[in-house]
Length: 290
Picture 1: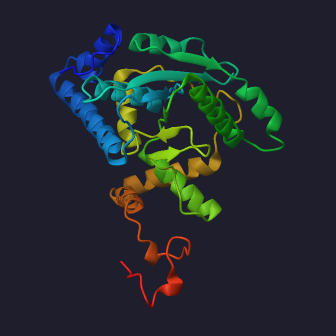
Picture 2: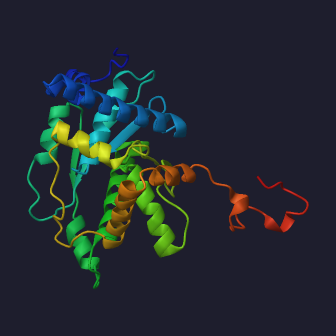
Picture 3: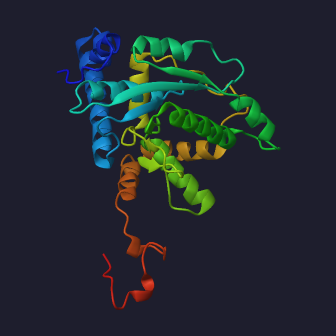
């Protein structure tokens, strides 16, 4: 049922047929594909509801990197928007960082197919990052910070109040272990975050979605994914090690990552050591330990 009448006709038609169910002929495969899409859609809906990510009349900038996760995020949000009980807008935005050898028009071609108004912005991320490397082997951290800076600046300029990022559950877990092992901090990517200048709210609608499900959806939908490593400097080896560790656990201990993710939602400050979160000096007179 269509409750949202603000979608352009082309985007509404795309949203009605967004499930891979519509491009598969085999009955059993159709059923499995539709079940996968509905599971991901449900998880996105739960994440949005649990953390209040989207509210009436929000203007959401959907960041499209050219990777499978951001394409999936756009499809799932568009599907939810079509039957949402309140109005909000989705505008895809792709930042072209100027990596050499990037295929021309790949992302824009997909966005034209989706049918929503969109923006393609070009910024000299690659050139500036290369200048700032200063002996580092990869530019990942510099590049990601610059991309975020340009995207947030554009969001403010265009009057967006929400910025949707395509990080999924595995990204959240990998970031947690990166901070734990290399920085000595227990933190990760939160599902929702306010920028330091209090002008934008960042949301991660895929927070409950597993990467392996998004991989399957990407193959079924045949998303035009941009090649990895276009910068020529390789990937972040520390993050790659965390991802490999999580995948190894998934094979050897299938429920381990589920339990760790659950733990991130069940924190007991009185049973840790952070004096900023719990006043241990007054423990004899209270507060009570949970």
